[in-house]
Amino acid sequence: MIGEAFGRVKDSERLIVVGLSGGVDSAVAAHVLIEQGHRVEALFMKNWEEDDEPGYCAAAEDLADAQAVAERLGIRLRTVNFASEYWDRVFEHFLAEYRALRTPNPDVLCNKEIKFRAFLEHAQTLGAAQIATGHYARLTQDTAGLHLRLAADANKDQTYFLHLLDQAQLERALFPLADLSKAEVRAMARRLGLANAEKKDSTGICFIGERRFGDFLARYLPRTPGPIMTPEGRVLGAHRGLAWHTIGQRQGLGIGGVTDADEAPWFVARKDVARNALIVVQGGEHPLLYADQLAGEQLHWIAGQAPAAAPIDCLCRLRHRQPLQRCTIVGYDSKTCQVRFDVPQRAVAPGQSAVFYQGDECLGGCVILGLD
Image (cartoon, rainbow, N blue to C red):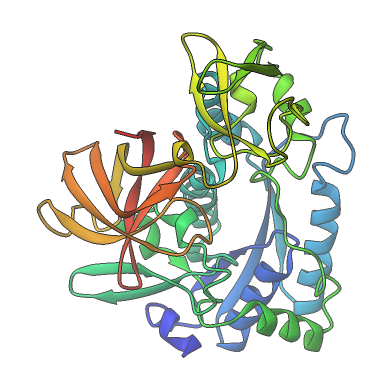
């Protein structure tokens, strides 16, 4: 099973460079390749310059973990700094999206521009035939090209974050964890005696780390306070800026108990740009939290073209780990699309990605532009 993903590389003299992050997934990915007889080296990428928040961007700790893994596995580890590339290709876009009052997903763009472009290009200068990462995803190949498919571990599947990759990038990519569960990965790491076997999964922004996000964003965006309001216009409090909030958000609103209202929690339903108002509703199942369609932009197909003419019946997820939802792409052109869902979807947030599937294959996706 595991070997299926590596049918494109059989020559043990060809070099595979693994992106070793310091985490357990990339460590076990390197081990799997070694066990299969490949010539393996590792590369640690530093993509964010340290600042005055020690512990929130722990590149030094991650590098130490990567060095320990490389030593244990007996492979060479190099380091490279892509901070400039990350700023120009990912972070500037990230800030522009927040200024436009949307909620971007930097991990998606980071994979496209850093892990499978800057890293790939650098690895090729080192003589690599292919690169490998610790992503949970699967690749197959036929006469039509390469197909990105769901990983065996549905809970860890990361195809959502990889949907912007193209055929050229996938041709040089390997995903050694395709057929492994997270439990199996940790068990393997323990058997190997890897010090990071129990290291927790990162949940922070790609390469920036797990820091206080509001304080971090305030360094780059001006505060634009305004009212927090109900759809009927009742003012409940104040926000520090629409950019700090996302559709469906519950925490961090600071409105607490409201006179003449029940105790159900409040959620962000809309951003009223004209009034600089954050529109909130009470109860997680409020109708304003749901949408049965969306408009998308920056449409991308992994195959290089759409699988069929519209309408296209397929599946979609609007966030990582969301169960796949039935939908129809009712229309599309080279850059935009219109999507209708069989069942209304909760918290459809402009700026996030809508990723399309047929069966277990990830077709590509778009950036959510709006709800119609």
